[in-house]
Image 1 (cartoon, each protein chain N blue to C red):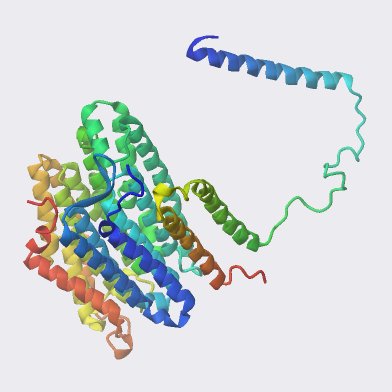
Image 2 (spheres, rainbow over the protein chains, first blue to last red):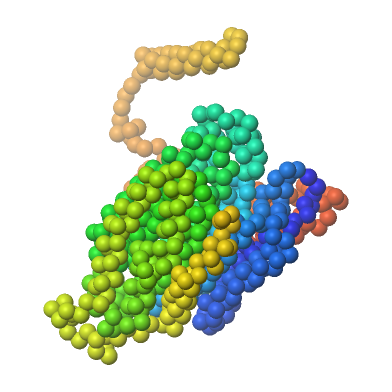
Length: 485
Length: 123
């Protein structure tokens, strides 16, 4: 290898733009504290800039790699990378919109908030392009460490500190297990590059230690996606964190975990007989535990947390087949509908921070548009019309499981969808509940009307519009999912 | 003493000799030395000074910040030394200089942050 290596700067531009932008946001806050109100716009601009850099690189050459050894590259831009990086940038913009009002209202330090958010997103952009165990691990840490601080950023709230501590301890444990698995994988194959690992495993198909290594390495990513039994942090952390941060964890951070999982499983394809049952069991446990626990929740953010655990179970189903394209398709639809649902929760939490299910009763009278949007997103998550995008995503996953000869998994998922229907429908119906004995006095008066901050309203409107369009025209999503056919 | 496990045999022997040496010398000391306990002799030894106060002491939280900043720059020095031995080699060009400047720049940003947030003020 020659030094200095010839680095393909266009390929690494999206994470670099994001990281430089993060530093820029922090510097702006330090030098000109009065410009604090401009920080959300600046952060959104950085993410759109990263998206532009991605588009430019993709337009010039659809597949490219850099940091290459003789045969494999540690960093690659291909359709998989492009799909996920675009997803992360767009989800990031929506989360910036959701945060703008609550950062100000809850006295969260703005400079730090957007700096950490952008840093975590830079880690995600790197993770999507990583084709090397070391880059993958480093990116995973860059995703996780700022997220830990984001959760605990409301320093006066003891629940936030507890949430951050829970998140930290479980994260450290999961990372330790993953590093152990990765070290075994390197020991068995003699390569850290995923391409090299795939080659070496093909040549040595029956080694118990390699199977153990794969299963251990999966554990860390199972934590990121909050799969049972690594899910226990999610409800507490989502509830203790600011609601936009909970949205960030449940969508962007979860998508990053799935990206890593897909990459790792693809590199370990020769050991599919070892890890397929593990993933299938994870999927069944995750969706069942998530849905059953969600039935009992009285707190809306906790309910959404358990629901997003269950949704992670659905995304794991095609990975057990293995059919990563179907998982990516579900992930794309899930990002839109879950961001929308959390966006509605942000809007309500701004005025009714208790966020109990009772606070949502009769929401239609106070904020009709918001209630309609939330009801729509809940039907999306349940997979019912009019939330067609959720239905399409579920059909994609069902078909993938049935075609892949795992019909039993599709049956389990169908049962789970019915269980989930109960709590989604109950919450959606309570929004329109105007029975006089339930309503508090004064409900529906001008004093109770919910003023929704403009950026939050914009975020909810955008996600709703995208969800509606994707419902009628699913090819717009399925067409860009790499390897979907 | 041959083969892979021969080394462990040697280690075991050394362990036995060590245990024997310590027990023989302490037992000998116990048997031969005279013992006359006084309250003075039973005091905690603190560099010859009479011990005062409690063993429990709290230090200023600010030391923590300084210790933290120290660690950051100590780690950065670990990277600087090997870099300093090679950065001037002609075949590398200016790339190492730029890369180290980036690295130090990020650390400098952290220090700038600490300074602007008044973490460095002692009072």
